[in-house]
Length: 553
Ligand code: ATP
Ligand code: MG
Image 1 (cartoon, rainbow, N blue to C red):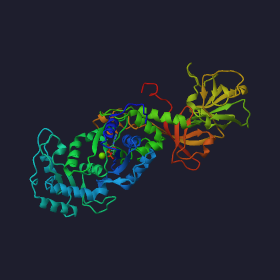
Image 2 (cartoon, rainbow, N blue to C red):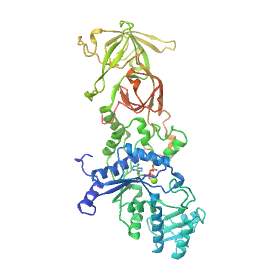
Image 3 (cartoon, helix red, strand yellow):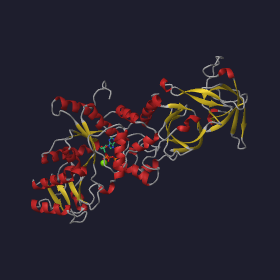
Image 4 (cartoon, rainbow, N blue to C red):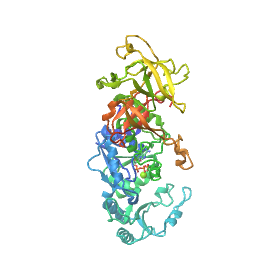
């Protein structure tokens, strides 16, 4: 973290707590529910929680909030661990699970009953929801509210041992049915669920609610600062009520604004729909805003951490421009990526005065940002491929690429002049014919000739075939939080373009999945897992054009 930056409001609270001696060290936690893959919003929370622990020499726990057995799965647990590690963070000790505390939470429930702060309610779900009232109308107390401690304990025991059907009873806190805060109107603490849990198996027939499990787990772990998103602000009085009533370790809940990104959906529930309805190829589809998706797309941990740092922490909801995220990854890849020549939509360029069987080796600079990356040899021959869009039959004046009579430099090689072109039977350009000037070779050009355009190329004979996947935004609408209709109506039908027959330079022959490159003038690319023997597949991480840097996102 940049020390010169002013402290955000959470850092201020922490520094006060450390200075006043309220805490000698801090403990935070990242508490995902294992019901889906993590997305960029979670990345913000991870960077915040783990980042604060790093900054203040404290610790951060990874705790799975696994209290909804029907929706949870070990597949998600594994992916979440992988994603946190990939971002470069280490949790304190073993991963924790709310389910580790099921016995302790049950003890808390018994205590609440004994002190007259909880009761078993036999009302139906509908009855309970009607008697809860509305924000402007107080609720009605349940007819079961004044059951004896003995009866409550007996019924809770019965619920625990599976004697009652699902939905017949719940345990509720006894707080205030007239509270202006709906969460304080006798909230449900335990519900009956005859479901197998991915960790506790068939041991339990009751499961704690979020409000009962989350705060108490914080307290059991002696979390000093429990950071969550703004929608939990209204839960805070209940969080504190539990701590005071049970007289347990006083963790402090602090809310911050969630990450909202333009053109992006950040909700596991909605992302799950995209996966289940096969609108994308899976959780790790490179168009998905999941951590596994952006990893496959070629985003780096560094770019995500820098992004999180740049957007900062606020108390009010806002909408961040996705261009800032793209800017972060360009900035990181620009420093690290080796440059390669690659042609996405090839047309032949034939150099008529270049000897038939001659191969020359050109010196390619691997990374102009990093001299230690050195150079490579790129074979150059009579027949090359160039980008179709780099030639125009009748170009306007400001088109600094090829057209009849025009001159350009071929990157790392010679200046060529277009002398002719040929079309195929469909009227498309099939071949561009040029002559070259041997005295203009890059690095030893004696002519002093200046041309405006430099084009990428590959040698036809030496280049290798590749499939290239170009991704565009998954949604066409900027602020998806503001739409009233189904978010899936806003999907971009052209979010994926597959180029089957691109040509890339021969040095990529040894590339393996995960390798990242910049194709000169095209963008940043990563070799995808779908690559096989003899067929490279590249994902475009991001194009080179950066509107953010120009100040007009
Ligand atoms: P979703 O709404 O996508 O299902 P969630 O909040 O239900 O997300 P959890 O697994 O409960 O998902 O979240 C784990 C942590 O990540 C919580 O502390 C939550 O506040 C935080 N988090 C989730 N979404 C965002 C977001 N968009 N921005 C910042 N933090 C987030
Ligand atoms: Mg949640």
